[in-house]
Figure 1 (spheres, protein in one colour):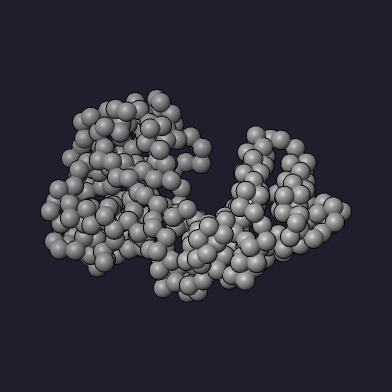
Figure 2 (cartoon, rainbow, N blue to C red):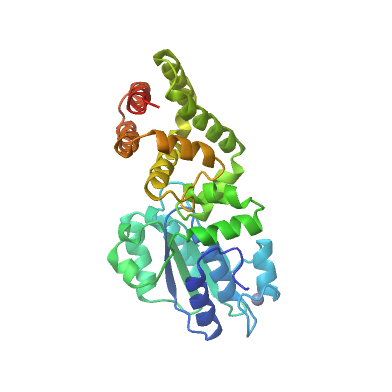
Length: 329
Ligand SMILES: [Zn+2]
């Protein structure tokens, strides 16, 4: 498979492979998709394919150009990546460079990462290049949202939209390529929203498993604990302030599992599949409406925290309300 490490984007990959083989490529591409879907990797694979000297598989991985690209020394693949803003000067530098032809007439590819960071001036400057595309030059833009760019830029690019990948596909990848157990893959996949980068980040984060364990412990204790103990749990949330979004996800996933089991009495859709006994027990003990209220409350807490409400107070109120709602266990 010529396009390496591009997971779950089969439709896009086969389209690009076909255009490369048939030499039907265009002078500008816009790769759009949320963070973590592999936009930069796809741009790199496409650039490699455009520069590849093979007549068959592109990128072949074997020709001089491909080998150099893999070593990171292919001077015909140029990245523009800025921390905050892409200024007009950076675009002008590219334009000056484009004027100088490659000595062997080979193709040069410019990858502008996070192109939505371009200032309006930078975009207007780039527009001139897109309007009169120079020969043997391809520009690949990546963006989390193409609507943030001038419509005139987007309309001159071939738009390639990356979509979140399906859960089954994600689980298969995690299981086969990353040695994640089938049970664990469901938990990781469900937290990743179909975004491979997010799943890999969760896996790399060794503390995630520990954190999930602590959150599930709190859930387990909360119904029988005293108010004092509940407020003591709030200390954990204070220490984990940076990871609060993930922690709230773990909580929502748990209560969502209770509802799903309560409604269907089936375990197929349960995410926390390593905690089946507790799921069954807790879902039987609690009313549907109460569990639903708890989920709504967690989401409300998330919204409050995001809009800068008092962090500690928001969480304490949430925990006490959960206890109140699920008291009659
Ligand atoms: Zn090649």
